[in-house]
Amino acid sequence: MRPADLRGRDAVVVGSGPNGLSAAITLATAGHSVTVLEAADTLGGGSRSAELTLPGFVHDVCSTVHALALASPALRDLPLAEHGLTLVQPDVPLAHPFDDGSAAVLHRSVEETAAALDSDRDGRAYERLLGPLVRHSDGLMHEVLGPLRPPRHPITMGRFGLVGLRSAIGLGSSRFDGQRGAALLAGNAAHSIMRLDQLPTAAVALVLMTSAHAVGWPFAQGGSQRVVDAMTSYLRSLGGELVTGHRVESIEELDAARVVVLDVTPRQLLSIAGDRLSRGYRRGLRRFRYGPGVFKLDWALDGPIPWRADEVRRAGTVHLGGTAEELARSEDDVNRGRVPEHPFVLLTQPTVCDPTRAPEGKHVGWAYCHVPHGSDEDMTARIEAQVERFAPGFRDLIVGRASMSAPEMERYNPNYVGGDINGGVQDLRQLFTRPMLRAVPYSTSDPRVFICSSSTPPGGGVHGMSGYFAAQAALRRLAKGSG
Image (cartoon, rainbow, N blue to C red; front, side):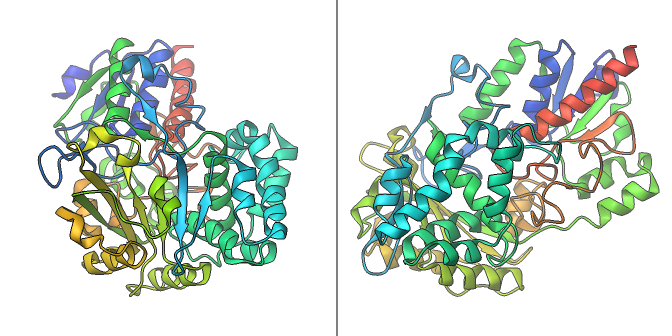
């Protein structure tokens, strides 16, 4: 597309991941003309699907379990079902197996989850911890899935802050005597890709666990690409335009549009628009910190994974790594630049609830572990050893395999800098102030340029909230320009 093709467009969105599409939909819903430009030949960013292993086996290239999709105010009210999206729920959102053949299980019910912990005391502690958050989950998600701002639900946020602004290891050891409750907390906190003794890893765990209880952790039937397909279909129905195979090298290409929303991280923002940004803003972007990366595997399987613990066979997501202490050692290694010998593995088995992803009687599996930033270490053997540890005979079922190292993740999606799928470290310094401290973190020093990637609040995940809030800021600019 030549720059002249953008004349008369109110907004251009660069990048077609869920955040970019959410921004475009928000702008189009407000009556503005919008064009989305995508460098790749396929729309979707981190929500694409492909036959990575063998014909007939559909794999999610990046995101697969949409733990925040139904909790997100930006996505849950969109008519995506009318545009072909079906979300399917596994019987059990999450299981965490142990070496003795047992497992901690996060059920949809708080009470059922609590009843299966190590003791009545731990069960009561779990209900006291998660029960109030789940009962007020709508208010909680409104507050945490966005930028730092005066709370509309101060009591809910106060309750959340008392327990969430802690480390996952500290919260787990103070609340639970047994290993199951602490392991559930640690595994969920490890999604942060931080050391589990850091603040606020407990908050990450509690948000994910609250979402699992309140709305579930669904898969998109047919693959995560279906989320993007539904969003693009809806955007087109609103008059939006989408162009693939168009890489934006300079902000000058987009001068014909009134506002520009970039679904990129600070590194790409500097490359595309650095000449238009103030010296202080550029300096702040250069200080932005990226986190560790991931190494990912996809498998085509001849049958279901033979977990020793029966409960794990019904779970959509499985956390592998043993006790909370073992998980903490793995994440500590990664964050100190060491490749863990026994990595924490996050595994999903989509075909437990979506058989459309594989030929009849076959299954797919998806897993990743964390590695130091930019590491090209091949973690295949170590990941598969962790699966085999809890599911003897697993390797015998593998009929196809595909892998992506941290550098390959970045080549696939430039927003995954060094393999960092969270768009930057999400510690206290960068949780709400990403990419830097500003009253409106989605605005830049150029009043017509906005950023909407996971490098803005609330960070990683398929929720569309970063795009929604960036679009709100862009709408204020458009309104000011027409006034």
